[in-house]
Length: 435
Ligand code: GKR
Ligand code: MG
Image (cartoon, rainbow, N blue to C red; front, top):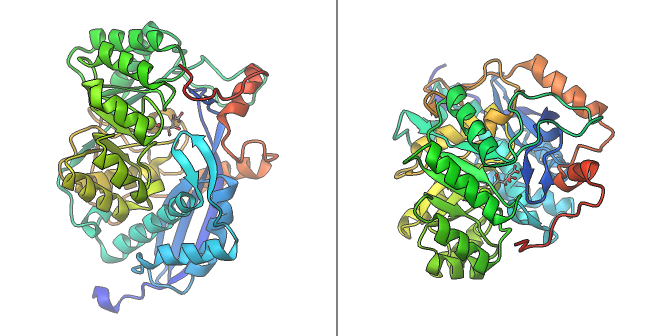
């Protein structure tokens, strides 16, 4: 019947579909985005035939954990969200995936087995919440305690960008044009405002010498007076360089994101920067919070439900930030509409969200939804439909999965340095600090 307690919320099937999604040639300090990036689409199916969807990273290491976890989920209850973490821990032990740091110096802080597990869990948690919401006729935000706002603001995520991927590389063309100097960055920002109405801008830096990126921020400030601006070089600068940039830009920036790497260096910059520092690199796990907060290393933490372990953990993070009077905002990596919907639901529930969230979504011309999620005035409306309020398009999913199947393995693991070597065979990801 309709009584929630009499519903059969048993998970009887879990489908995992790895896909490759088109990505434009966006530059960062490691290199350039590959023409296609891996994502994993998670579907949980209940005994009543309700399907919930989730999305997370799709690289091989994530798939290797997601597959056994999917098996273990069958027969469990949709509502057993807390148990997902212990289940994932057990799976990781079985698969001997409990080594320490597996990748130091990526763009999301130190990559540990623990974080990898949380990222996998996030895809399942979101899928379970979507299914639960559909079963109960409630939006995901209601399952998280209810929305505090009816729309969530996002920032235009500006990137230095080539016109197209290198010649001869199979890719999907894009119509954003090149952005390799201040003029190009401003033109890109204008396109963002025309297409989606964004009023807040973030420039991905760490690509060109700091003076050029300072000039780009100045050009943005001139073109969009009074609008919130951020610059994020992904830790490419030394402490003195960070301080110099801060001095030049402090009156123009809402915050400076990860100017340098590591809590001690960030604390040194924060003490004298005169502008708030934000991070998605030095505080990326609960264990990193204490040192960073007590040293005053960061003033804004960029949450990301993928690597913090889901929507409920994102709320926990926000509560800790609130306690220490540290702001929250949201980080994003290449993602599709399922994740944008999840980000929007959780962001809608976070009190005191004063900064626009980041999203890569406008860069993704492809999606697995029947309808793309729209930005109006740079905002996404919070859906009150059951679950996430999105619908999977099986044809699109099959098409992008086919691309993954047909790949010879070259693109199944995101590698921005490898993509850069296609254009510049001598490229190695620069040692940090680069400047
Ligand atoms: O996609 O190139 C990129 C970004 O640099 C991304 O990988 C970062 O994780 O967007 C992220 C950030 O804010 O640092
Ligand atoms: Mg960042």
